[in-house]
Length: 373
Image 1 (spheres, one colour):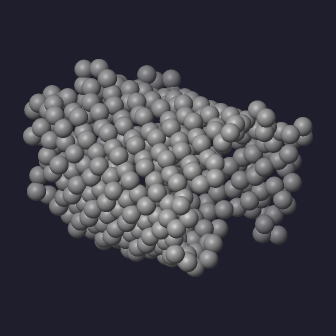
Image 2 (image 1 turned 90 degrees about the vertical axis):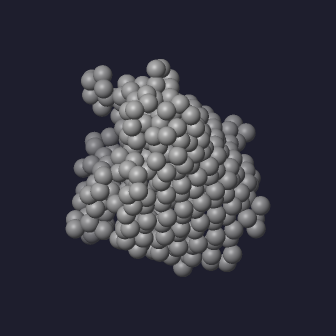
Image 3 (image 1 turned 120 degrees about the horizontal axis):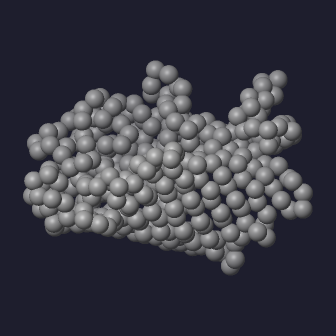
């Protein structure tokens, strides 16, 4: 009875296109609950000599979420599918969703590929998942600094095409349309290719986000830490573009190989903007992951260079280079396919640049548990 009620509730979300789906076998409920005791010491890079120590409970390894998905055979080799996913925050007083996540409908045929419409992960964000530590939720890895907007993680109002696999290669094209007709609304486009065969995986994507400043955030500023306690840690002091209408372009590539006893990964990410306030941010990340029985150990090191050309005296860096680096390690223990415990740690640094970017440092440790269902 409970399963039927859940299925009926899901049908009201996905709409009439799936109104007559076989609810007994066509819908799957899934989710992730992640919680960790996390300690963070952050030296604010935007305000000299200001630091904060912070300890709290929040998702550290992955975002907690709840979703429903289903597929339907439409005949002649054509399949339809949907997904409706929301974010939950068990560390807050209410578990109501903070925002919509991957929610879309799609149609596919093996010989023609797949078309997906709705809110979905960008190809670049999928590539970031190739990092040996995955996409750690408190966001220490340097490649994350190339993301100047949440739109570059998930694009809403988006249309995506994935080609059939040919020799292990698939092509990916995506267009995220502006939220409104306003000229200040963002629009997202990307072209990418992925390769997967035997023990090797590789991916490359070029994407572009219009009408957004080319700023980035220092590690620890996006999710938890001081930002949740009301302290102001702005990203404007780290901007490499002062214009809110300048488009940001990114080139992102990754390659990984599984040797059996260990897997290695390299991830390259560069974001840049043009115009009067041109600037760029280039990052390189190397990682290794070693499994042993129920354990896995992952270690990654990344370094980046910020080349800023903003106006002196504006609080931003003058022409010249600043550098960032991060070391992230993870120790994971899997009780079974669903339940795991982990220990995460990272140290991130931002160097002084042309005299206006202050040195920043973030040291974080997290001990937590994750349950997938």
